[in-house]
Image (cartoon, rainbow, N blue to C red; front, side, top):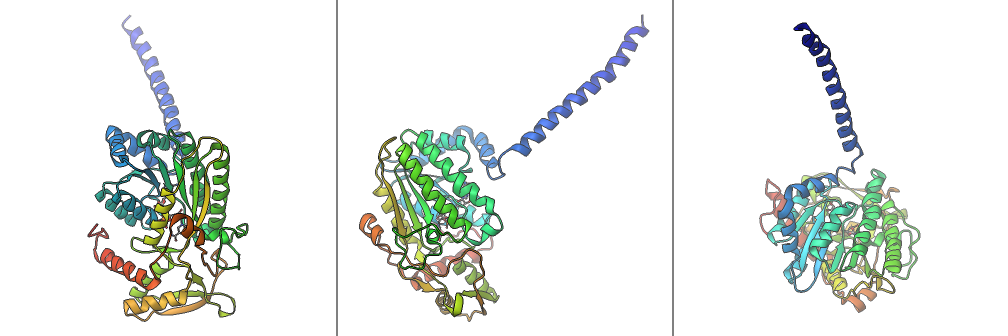
Length: 406
Ligand SMILES: NC(=O)c1ccc[n+]([C@@H]2O[C@H](COP(=O)([O-])OP(=O)(O)OC[C@H]3O[C@@H](n4cnc5c(N)ncnc54)[C@H](O)[C@@H]3O)[C@@H](O)[C@H]2O)c1
């Protein structure tokens, strides 16, 4: 009688351990499978942040969106153009909420610093991916946005040869995700979004006009923007979304992008490193219609202010504009201006342009944007570069790389 329970105990105990081990293993594999199958890393922090922020998060979105005039969701708000547009909107009294996934395409610290600057202007930026449909749904519910300024994208032409999928993720799937959220939102916002001068691809007729063909993209980046323009057409046609596409031409200025030539030339010239200056066939110079950020911001605000409401179904506004400076400058001249302003002779190496998706020449016809958006760029390259260099010296002289002033 005494032995029996003992024997039962002895036989049962190892069995329950095995069972426990078995179920623990099953549970563990579910956890591993869940994490392996979850969306790209850029998408997950938003979920984490959202659940951590809870009620505070919702209050911050409501507060940041508050306005008697425009209530704007800015995607890619911690990006170069997004930061400037968000501040300009907030300054004139519009409500602004940002979303950005802070990806590491270039210095994440620069995006964080821009986001700190936005916080100083009382602009709340949600860390999340535009492919996160449930996050967008909550944002629209809380923010009651009248407008969306969609700037989030995988930018850069050459990087497409390294990471082509990032262009599909952000510029195609991401755009569809944003337009789906807009279509389902109540009220349905008007959408203004960034296309690119790169859609003109291999065209040789200048200046580039909105009426020109755009079916010969030279890079996957250009193709993703062209695809975006076609996707915009379908959402306008089926769901009555008011959509305006802006084809930006080589935007530069303070808080700019480190992957762009004017930025990394500055860095390398100051370090005494050699810079590669590309030239076209037969020594033809490569030129860009460099456009200063403040001019681009004015164009974006002009597009938002003239956007009609979405209609929900039936005919709605569908527009496309070039936003350039309409005065192309050779890259060799850009280098000369930098040398003059930095008072340093650059160590230059002239090379034929490699087949990496870059085009030889861009030049915007801006007559349509002038007429319909009141767009009128005023900053020439030397003036704009001086402003960029002032910011650059200030920003990078601080060891922490954090902005010293708002
Ligand atoms: N700067 C230019 O010269 C130029 C020229 C033509 C077109 N554009 C377009 O203008 C827009 C803004 O460009 P920018 O120069 O400010 O670039 P940027 O890279 O500085 O800004 C884009 C921002 O979007 C964010 N982002 C990217 N994918 C995202 C995603 N899936 N979810 C959430 N956030 C995401 C990035 O983290 C980044 O902060 C882009 O659409 C770009 O393609 C820029």
